[in-house]
Image (cartoon, one colour):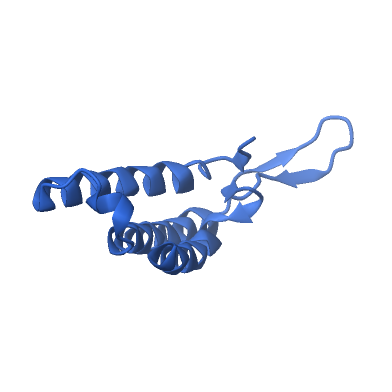
Length: 107
């Protein structure tokens, strides 16, 4: 089960898209259908690019203050939730993806 709030799904979408592009590019450059699966550096590059895109995007999106809403029953102010993916704010996924890229380099 994938859990996100607001635009947090972009973490998975951007990462998946960049991994697909890396597979397509490496297989077409090296003309080998199994090159992407056999080598870790294309995945490392895709994860690094995803982290480099998601980190500032998350900082930008979560920096903006949302509208303050007031609950009708209690009269209390409620802020909109941050952009998260698996309960982790988007900007924290940048370093997580860097680490995942290093792991995939050796696996």
